[in-house]
Length: 468
Image (cartoon, rainbow, N blue to C red):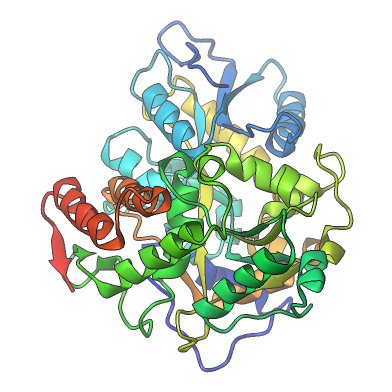
């Protein structure tokens, strides 16, 4: 459900930050499989940890962090071992492969990295183990803001994951390209038209660069739904009603003008050739190119994207770019017509969960406790360019020190929104991606794509839809 806009936006201070983070976290929230599971013959002294590995071989933020935690854990637990089981795949393929692993004790690891958008679906499918007995005896759980704890709580009231951070989204823009196009260095668009007009100006005056990137289509997976479509959809209307899910009726929304308006924006980007080539946009690894190539090399003017991008540009990341904060500007994504509150963001995050079929769940939670010490949580937030979920980490001076952009992205807390992360959401998300892809390629008009979405949603949600 969206956070209601407030008359004044809170300042980002050491005192206010935990409260902002609490608001932000309100939630409704290798390429082949290996026989790594904890079946009857598994080693009781080894914990197997599965995570999403970047498709960019140079980016090892998660790998390096887990390697450090593994070393700590094995030193503190003599005789115990940690086996890291990476899944190297784009987001959409990661989710599919992870669910395949969770179905059998022969392939289920002991600990998995779960996106909050998918966790309720996996809980409903019986893939995950409730963590309440462990959490009740873990003192550090009290350090997590209360709403962070809800990120992995199911309708049965039990908690199935430990969050490790969250995020917000906005517009990144290249100051050099803007200068060449005659656009302001302090660009802050007020409407969707302002964004499109800036992209049109770049196209006219700075040929050879991509004016605007909006993730789209099924290959982009949740990046298309959340970074792209929902950043538009939740900027329509006056914010008084969720444009995707009607909580009072417990039904998904179809037939709305807002949905068509968001699709029309995507159609305009690709019809007017303001975005990347369609073949590039529909490349499942395009997000990797945006972070590792297009932005650092000055080939992309405006990128609608997340707060985590700088993780790829830090020292030791493989794509070091220390000048990024000088080369790039930041702007909030505006609402459609500039209506209050004037800007929009989406928030999500990831959790660590224990599969129901894990062979060594107790050892897995011991590893979680090592990962989530204050020192390790702080180190991860800095390395991952994430927004903290522990109050003590958020209050630590090192959290914001030398982290350009963190104040900007945390300030978006006041106007952020959250995916309705109910069990049907993954199917809804796929239907959104299909509609986006139709208008991106030109195979469908906005009306046809919206109609197809409405029909698909009726099937995906067992008819739990309401028309606006």
